[in-house]
Image 1 (spheres, helix red, strand yellow):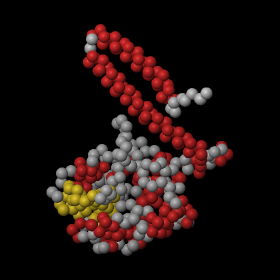
Image 2: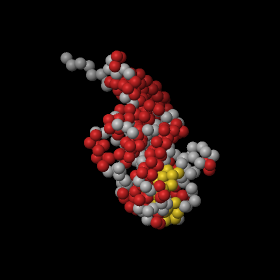
Image 3: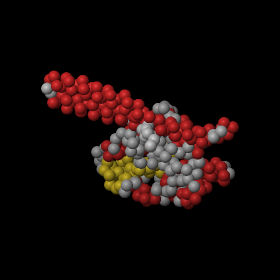
Image 4: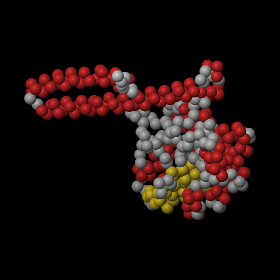
Length: 358
């Protein structure tokens, strides 16, 4: 005789045991009322209402299950990190926080790191020299092992507001090691390496690859980034590569902002003085990204361009909660954010080029 097959989720068993009798009772009770009034429309309305209630309960149940599964995964990782109490120490606790698969690549093999570094215009060697780390110390961070992944860093600090999320990006160390693997965006660099498009602002310029490449071609560039470690590393690289006369660094604070954190006012003058802006892999990290885009549009002259790549999260946050994940869900489409003065003149599924026409 076979074993009784119980539901996989005990919550479904409990809810089914409570909900179904209630539904049958309601149907019986309401059917009597309908019979008294002889209203077919009333019965149909009741059925529709019960269907909607069922859908709402299923939605709430799915959300509850998702959170429960996430909590279970975190507990399992904690248990795996310290299988026995005697093995628990600071490092095993730290390694509970690692890649979650929500933004960018997960842990990398050394072969993968070597491949990316080969396309990164010398940035990896620059970073090892900048940090002074040994080969083994540097490799762990470049491979994004465990706690050295920026998603683990995000999970550890667990930002609870837009300002805390901005501070996470400002102070992140792991993003420095992640972004150094980005290669030069040759298509974008080639497009804006013309006098008509200078000065070129790279908004959130990472480790400086694009700025340095464009500056070497004799085009004036501006670098902006909120990450303190990345900012100083980019300055180091600009000096090391001898293009300091062609690169102007913009900060997220100045006398114009009252020396308060402001990622818009200093880098985006909103006076039509910029020829072009690169915003590659950045807008999807900004909760109110459309406000930044509006300021970008006002900052470039007519005929200027904004080149962006923005891999937003396809999954929205449930309810009215603020999205504080690594990759955010867009509130507005890029076309809506760009507004009527901008026209999409190129898009290949990765990079998009928007031109200011009026």
